[in-house]
Image (cartoon, rainbow, N blue to C red):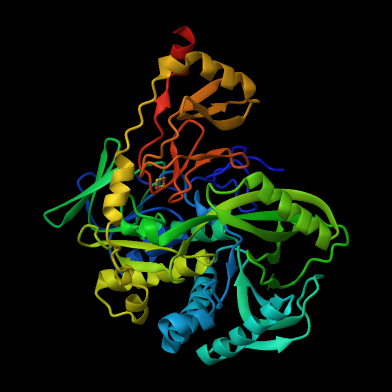
Length: 517
Ligand code: FES
């Protein structure tokens, strides 16, 4: 299995994904002092990069700020499917938002695939884009009923779909739908191509710059990262959940999905995208990297911080072995996405946030499509252009939940006072029980501590209390991170933030002092 080396496209987990590549550093110029940007975009995944480019193309002066390197988050761990059918099915959208909403989304998702394709062609990005036939298949009567309803709603929405008698992969099926003109691509090569164009158009990028907070005063956002302050008239949080305690945290549940990239003994790689209808569903596609073919098999999704990631990988590997003749599993990784409570993403003005601040989140398993669609919608909103989908996907469709803010604030205020000296001996004992490169939550006299022993046997002790709203993090043995079960915040083994909404590292407990006590 591949782990991080010195790839320039690092990601937010220990396992290497198929998309991580070494590439020449982007030619980034230092920012000019005292520039007031038209738009500051925080977050360098597909949402942030595409938004920055769209706005810069329209004449806005933009800066894109990323805490690590571009594509460090979900864009570096997606399986990069591009679909006109969504995790929220068209029957569900019909019933919850109306048939016109389904038709709007069917049109928009088709246009987004075309937009990605046309960016790739126009900018000559070598991003492995291919249109593919896509199969959605049922394996029992209940799923077949759902599939028939999906067929009829999708056709009414204007999606090109028909019934067929094959599913493109060697897995038994009962009934199959074929969606035409779906696609796949290489997400990191794509966003790097967009970023190069953005720089060429005189956009600015700040990588390895972690935004801690922002303030809005006299029509200007002051975005603070260490000793840097960036100023802008508009602010886009392209970070999944925006920072702070806000209602979007409650309306989006963080999930992790697992992916294997395997080689097949018979060399017969499917030339399609395919999905079953299990809960959670499995997804399949092939991709060639540096002359090697891989089959990608994904699934085993669960809420972040709720289940054992190693068990999820084992289940997925077992399933893969049972269904394909696999010669090797070359990559395995997991990635995070956010499931919105009503099925559709939240794209637009940040509810309860500062004036002229925007969010884009809740993309479900359709992050490449909705991330790109966010760029189109946010560009229109910032330019004051009417956009048909802006109302449907407005984050303000949220109904405030009474007592929510009190609840979260109360959680955040639960002070966690770990009295290190008192537990010195127990901590040392717990550390001995850990293997190298292993972490564990230990409980001492009713208090919890996040303990990790690094590859050299050095222990790092952290407060396990998430700095966002006070939940207790869990150890992710596969990606070597501390994952919060509440809103998906994730922290590295030294406590640094890997994934928001938290903006502060986990508190470090000085373990060597304990040893001396
Ligand atoms: Fe919200 Fe941890 S991410 S409490």
